[in-house]
Image 1 (tube, helix red, strand yellow):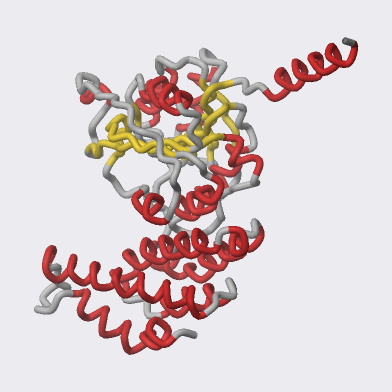
Image 2 (tube, one colour; image 1 turned 90 degrees about the vertical axis):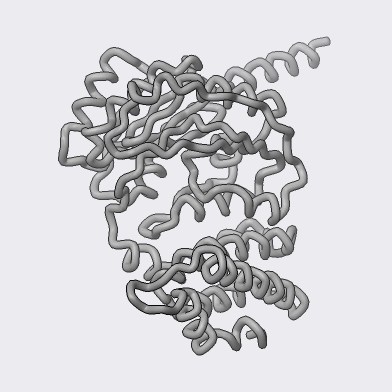
Length: 363
């Protein structure tokens, strides 16, 4: 009897200590957001799901963004404003992760806004089947559109079946962004997942670290996030992103080795690396980056693949090249300025010259 009482007390204390204070924590990096940030804040503080945490991380924005946030923080205690000095968006988001007290984590850009029912609907859908990750869609808006322009648009929320068979095919269909998803906080914190600093494509890098721990997913066709079409890039994309793809790939390899994914689930490890390859290459084709493919195979070497698994990669990538060639040549027929050849054909010839032996002949 006494033992049962002690167990009950322990269980109650455990539940109290580990109970999340909020249902969803929302992290918003802030830099030069003065023009749009009021719409962003208004749609957050007026969510029908009130038990949310709103975390703004100001990267020493030179405009009035910080003062606007302080103005709202005085009237809404759910708002947290923290500052970080001269950081990348990855470091800014990592700073926000330090203050998370919600059951789920979400991200919003400071120049975007969301439907007022979004988090209530998404949270209920996620909790219904206790999913680890929920992805939704977004609506593109023009630079000068405001929430008032969109408030009469009625978002339709429809539940979908839970996906529990997680493989490369399913994960390859997910979007690269983090702001069109909500993540179970336990997965992020327990596995010490963070954004890798000073690289482009940081969203995909983060997602590819989350995916090995995801046991259930929901994908909802809900256009509840309003993504503003404007230049959001602070850094030179060629120097910042494509110049760092070797670091990007090496970081993924080291992470997968650290969590023993190469031993526990080598097939998933290969699938995730192929997803990274496809997404990165799709962008690097525009810049004819001859080193990218060689760096990919160099990174894959570190996974200590046997010949059988390497042949699996080769087969998948051959199919991928055929598909991307078909897309550019037959479907889009894109051209480089006044050159009368599809740009992908030019890239393909350069690729063959530099890296074809890696793809077809192994290491």
